[in-house]
Length: 232
Image (tube, rainbow, N blue to C red; front, side, top):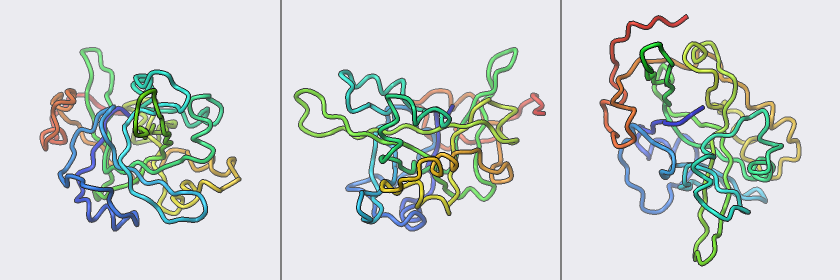
């Protein structure tokens, strides 16, 4: 799964890389420990060939038919293999796909004496995009729609496999347009974009339990920590 991630890169550089205008008043501060239910920076593209849009979405997808928005707490991830079939995700998979912007993510390795946190990032620490789905929800008495998103997961590559049996789908830059296009009728081809990224595009760093608490959002979250656990 993917339950925490980072976006430390200055937002002006993120906007330039992903060809977006940043939404509204956005605090340009590094995020070291983005957690479920928090706002996340994403990119989606309206129908009809309009340009990409940078948007803030709540992490945890709330289906349009949901009666209770707390369902989003259980929808932070969607399995790429079945998202096109699940009632909660299939409409979004068809024409509400998005890029969730990040520059690293965390996974926890189960050990006999607890869990070891690992930070995954590109070797050059550049930002990248998770494959995401987004929805709009308009609850009773609510004046504005609430837009939310989920991050798709896939089988792990060789870098992530020793730590966890799932990893987020990280899209190749050349696949961003095809993924975002809401008018793309070839959903089988879209589905083929959701495999694990090449292992050499990721590096991993053991980090301390400081990251375990979502209240911690600082440089210490990604600081390398000693570990006696060998990965094979």
